[in-house]
Image 1 (spheres, rainbow, N blue to C red):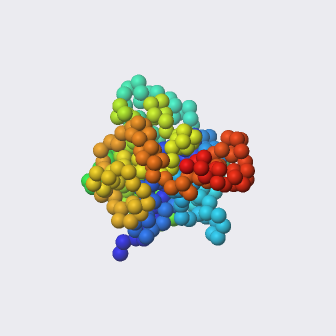
Image 2 (image 1 turned 90 degrees about the vertical axis):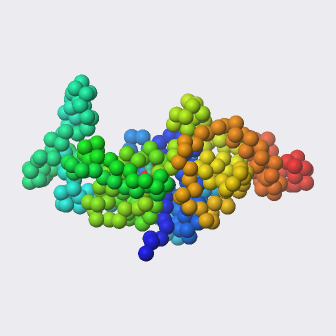
Image 3 (image 1 turned 30 degrees about the horizontal axis):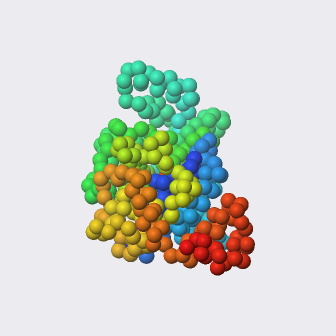
Length: 367
Ligand code: GLU
């Protein structure tokens, strides 16, 4: 029997809330809604040096502004807060122990100096970059002794030395195959006890019952590592579906040097959430026929992954401006009125109460 549909977005709170997060969220949510499933938000904040609370807040604010609400959080009965990986470290530590016991992972005691020297040598000799697996040959009893003596270590994935890992992609419709010699013995747990993206992502997707991982194509090289982890744990992997990346007009990966990427910027610049979502839906290929201007809620029924275009979608700001105009012309006055009064109040021109008291006048002003 097919698993119940549960999908998620898993942004890392490092910097401005990215327009790509809204793009991926929109399609995940449409897929969940179309299949009577759940859409989750998980903040992947295990990188302690780069994650910030401000960035997390900005992500939540932007998703709320866009109306891309999520269905579930850890506080049962309370406000639907997102899941946060920094609050779940015991799950990842337990999972790393399990992999060590199964021989699918090993402890590595190599110092930063040794790894740096190795990297430089690989660079000089043009050898394949990656860990040389020195600690993989350590006797487990010896590794235990060193841990007990307080020596810092990380836990690495023991990638099979030969063969390849394959997975089917739910959007591309073809198998992606990556040879094991191309895959590094990835660090799973860092010496501070925090997991890396790979371990935390897989453990959470499993524990949260995620059925479909719909994410950007830049994660394709990580997926074989994830598949190896699912196999090592003996867990059923989700369907992986990689969406094409948004592109600058010159076809390079969307970047803030060539195109605004921050959702906060779009909001401040006066774009309507309806227009931005419509534009993102169009980029992903969600339009039916020639219709370009539509309400994205129509994706909430009958949306299938096969509708997503695999060709590189170009983010054309001019087209978004045009789309914004189309939505502005259509928007109902009672929808726009509270937004305008909030904006006037936020700019300090008049209080919301004063505007409400002069209801008729405000109405005419906005109209
Ligand atoms: N934390 C990753 C990100 O920042 C999640 C990627 C995924 O969806 O697996 O996008």
